[in-house]
Image 1 (cartoon, one colour):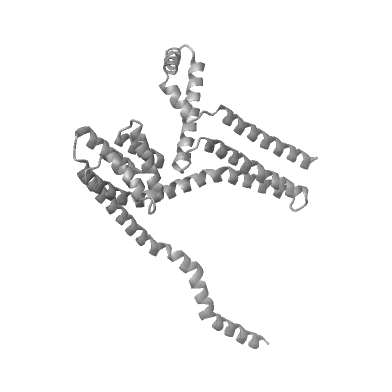
Image 2 (cartoon, rainbow, N blue to C red; image 1 turned 135 degrees about the vertical axis):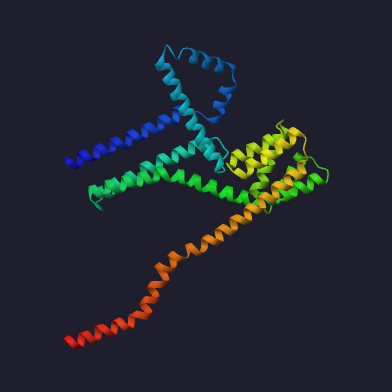
Amino acid sequence: MGEIGLIAGAAFIAVTCLFMVVGVLLTGRSAVSVRVDELSQESVSRRTNRSLSASSFPSTAATTAKSATEDKDSASLVDRIMQAGFYKKQTVWFYHIIRILLAVIPFALGIAAYQFGYVSFQWGLVYGILASVFGTLAPSFWLDYKKSQRQTQLRRALPDALDVIIICVEAGLSLPAALSRVSKELGTAHPMLAKEMAICQREIQLGASSGEALRRLAQRFDLAEMRSLASVVHQAERFGASIVQALRVHAETLRLKRFQLAEEKAQKAAVKLVFPTILCIFPALFIVLAGPAVYRIFEMLDKMTG
């Protein structure tokens, strides 16, 4: 009876978690709908009325704050997925579905292992819970890993792209035309940056300024170097300064940062080599050097005792 009660309790917890995640999926809002609500006059008037009545209806104000928090969390997840390189709307649903599967399937496998007699009930429950927790957190760590990879690729490609942009602008092309040229010339060496520059060029064709398009590119990567580039272009466009000179200075700064980052990694390599040296090389040396002496000592002690 005790094992049946534990199984029932574990099943109840799993089903409750599943319904909670499904509820979040059904009540979650996409970033597009949030943006449309912000731009609509009806949403503005609704928020104004809520703010006016918040003093007389505290529960309504608390509900509004909770809804705003949920929308902020949903927008943060959308930003993380976008920064990892997935721009389709269906990716958010796939992310939630994968988290649900990775949370439920390992737990079910742990219970199944107990049912087939491979492990005891306690160990099956422990393995299932630990695997479910790891499966729930794994997609988040994977998004951070993909985001870090994209940032590294863009950080390496950005100085080369700026050199091409400077050459094109000095030759008489406008900045949008230079971005289009970059997307064609660097398609082989830096395909990811070429695609992003093509997106920027299309946004400019739809009416956005060059600084605004680059700022959106910085949001898609969450990279400080890209945000500073967008700020440089925006200031040059706003005050009529020479954009060629601003881009040249920024390119030299990025190249210097890249060189300093390479020096930092080279300095860290010596420290990182200490651990494999101690754990792998030194034991083997001790065995080779001290092994025969230890064998001789034990052999002599054996003869003396014999």
